[in-house]
Amino acid sequence: MSAPVVAFVADDHFAMPLAAAIASVIANLNREQKLKVFIVDGGVSQTKKDRIAQLEDRERVNIRWLKPSKSHHDLLKALPYGCCGGTTYYKMFLPELLGPEYPRIVYLDSDVIVEADITDIWEADLGDNYVLAVQDLINPCVSSPCGLTKWRELNRRADDELFNAGVLVINAAKWHEENINYKLVEYLRSYRRYVQLCDQDAMNAVFRNKWGRLNTRWNVLPFMKKASRHSLLSKESHEDLIMHAHVLHYCGSSKPWKVRCRHLRRDRFYYYLDMTAWVGWRPKSSSIISESVAYGLRTIQGGLRRMLNTGLE
Image (cartoon, rainbow, N blue to C red; front, top):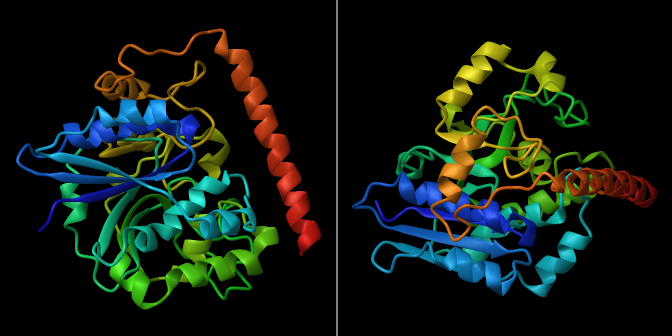
C-alpha cells in the first residue's frame, strides 16, 4: 500500500502539542516507510510552522499545510461550538481539502501521542464504513451524558455505541460519493441547540452503524472520575489500558503541557516533545493562574455560545 497519509487540525495554541504528536508518529513508523502529513491551518504563526517543519525529512517525511477557504471559515462561524472550539470542524472537510487523490486518510487530534506504527490502522480494511474508530471509553453510548442529546428523536437505541472522533481512519472516497460534508453540516444546523461535542456529535448521528471498530488501544482517553459511572471499564482496567496504549489521547482540560496535569503517562508527551524544536520546554508554575483564567474564560464562552444557539433556534 502507498505511504500513510496522516492529517491534523491545529490553531496556534496547539502548535507545540501538534509537533509532539507528529514526532511520535515518525518515531514509531517503520524506518523503511514514508509518510505524508497534512495539517489544516487554523491560525498557526509562521514562526511555529517553521519549527514544525524541522520534523520533515526529504527522503521520508513530507509535511504540507492546508489553508481552508473563506467559505469554510464562514461556514464555521455559522455552526454551533458546543464545548469545543470551532477549528475542530475542519476535520470534516479533510476529504475535500485533500481531494480525490487521497481515498483514505488517518486523522489524529493534536492532543495525542502515538506509541505504535500508524501503518497498522492505515492498512486496516475500511469495508463499506465511513470511518474506523474506537468506541468512546468515557461516553460509550449515544445515551451517555455527552452522547447525542436527541438520540430518541434520531430513532437510536440507548445502548447504540458512540465513537470518539479523535482518531479516525476516514473512507474519503465514500465521503466524496455520498456528499458527507453536506449531511454533517445539515445535522449540525438542524440540531444546533443540542450539540455538545461538535463534529463528534454529527458523525455519530449521520454514520449510525456504518463505522468500523478499531482496537481500543488506538484511542485511549484519560480516566475521568466524573465519567466513571458511564465508563466501559473499572478504574484499574482503564489505567492498565493507559499503560499499554497505542495512542494516548489527552482529551479534556488536563493537558500534559499544563502544570496541574496528573495523567499517568504525561511523561510520554515530553519524551516526544524533546524530539522537536521545543526540546527542553516545560511549563512554569507561574502559569497556574493563567491556566485557571483561560479555563474560566472558556467556560463562560461555552455558556454564551449555548445561549446564542438557543436564541437562534
